[in-house]
Length: 155
Ligand SMILES: [Zn+2]
Image 1 (tube, helix red, strand yellow):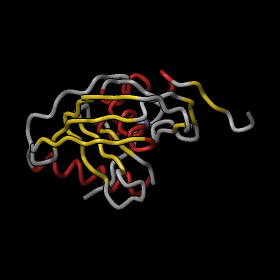
Image 2 (cartoon, protein in one colour):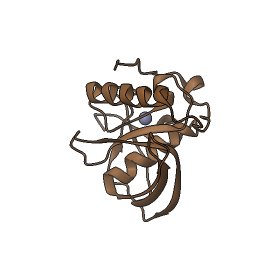
Image 3 (cartoon, protein in one colour):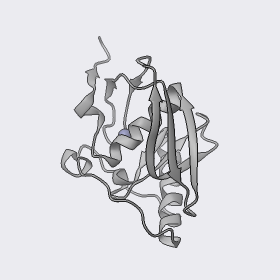
């Protein structure tokens, strides 16, 4: 395993759309493990492959909000979403030190594949639902400076 460099403040690269994963091979498993190590070190809630320079539809997320499991979502799709959540400011490891106000769906169901290529459905609400939507956006080339209102500390 190895730490990967996190792409920061590069709107051109982070604005690209990622391609689907087609090979569920050792290279993919290594990438996902590297992303886990990188996210653990950075103490973030989620990390998408484009943030480590790989334009593939992969992200990981801290699904228990305690750093015990960074679950991988490969070729994810949002199959349902409901409600509105504007409770949190949102940050991004690719835009260190900045936060944004963004309204997200409060509850979502996602379908994705794991590193073995097995399909699963995953339901989340509140903070985790927000995290999944944020990471999914990265795969579409959408980052929080594009959709959020920046929040400054002394406001
Ligand atoms: Zn992000």
